[in-house]
Image (cartoon, rainbow, N blue to C red; front, side, top):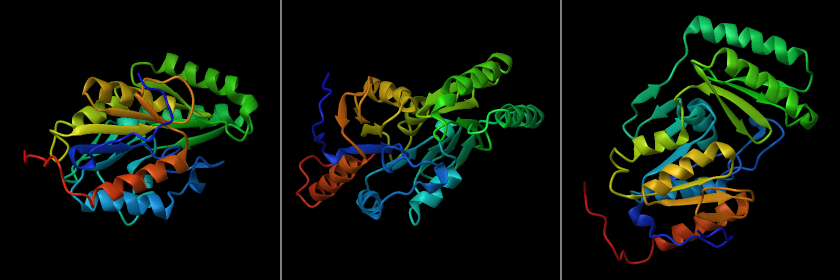
Length: 258
């Protein structure tokens, strides 16, 4: 399989696009609230959507944060690694934890983080993230805390490692399975899925897209199941510009309606 930093060539009109956000559409920042999507990339997503090409975002962030980052766009979205999903029709589907269990985990995690300044707890509403980007020396401590909680709450929680973060998400949440669900519905069904991501959290998405005969693209270095690569967030923006240019060319293979 190709692992080169080539510009993937696609017939955009026949595809359905799924994008991770942090590290893919937007550069990673020291704190999650500092992240932004450059206007150039937002304009490219808007142009794809305006041309009738299905576009969705699939992220570890909650959908509410995705909407804020994508303003004025509101796209089909999967948040918290698939624990939240908004379909193309606007229907919301969420995995949830029992309120009492969720609150108990919140209290215990907050106490554990308080013992290690530099370890930051993010409550995502249906999941938790232990960030150590500002204190990389705490990686093993963060891993130990996360693994301990999964061991104790394994019936409801799953561990998802990422870049400078360990996430505790509802069991059953998966970027791969949520992409599979999108691909069974209009307007995604019948198209070639394309998923672009950068992190360990995106590997499940790459695997499912490969199974579906689609195009999986990893941003950056590291081992991956993705078939192709782009070097950086800036390379993604350049590639999106190229996709826009193809939309002005005569259509060679019209998409058949569902």
